[in-house]
Image (tube, rainbow, N blue to C red; front, top):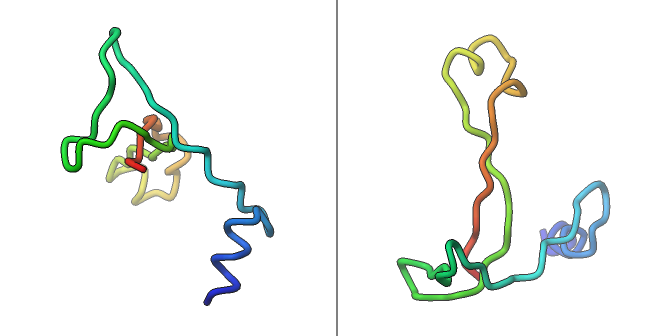
Length: 71
C-alpha cells in the first residue's frame, strides 16, 4: 500500500502531482477554512452529478466545479 502512495506523490502511472497549497482571496477578502481557520488551499475540481446522466452512463456531460481543499 505504501508503494501506491509513493507512486501517487511521484506522479507515476498517470497520476499528476498535487498542486502546492496557495492562499486565495475573493473580492479582496482572504479565503479561510470554516473548520480550522487555515488560509492555504490546494485547488481541485469535482463533478456535479445528475441522477439521470449517471443512470444512462453519460456522466461526462455534467458540469464540474472548482473546489479548494484546506491544507
